[in-house]
Image (cartoon, rainbow, N blue to C red):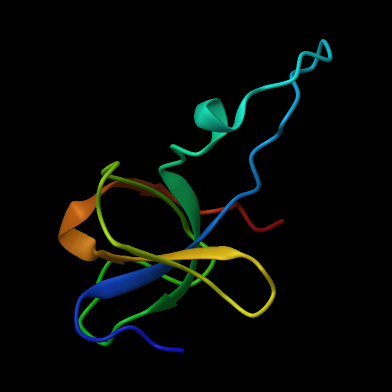
Length: 89
């Protein structure tokens, strides 16, 4: 899959359903995730690379579930707030 233009495909990270102390988090507390890992970029995206982690606006993008059950969101690059790259050793 490759997004069109300046769009980015982001795979949401799994949100823990319990805290470190063992408290159960309700679904309403875990379904507002706004960050994830870039899995594909459109040809007009200049800044990001696959593997970068991004934070995007809460109500941005188009959400869908892929064949593996992972949530993917397609977000315009202009609606990304920040990104960072994992350091390679």
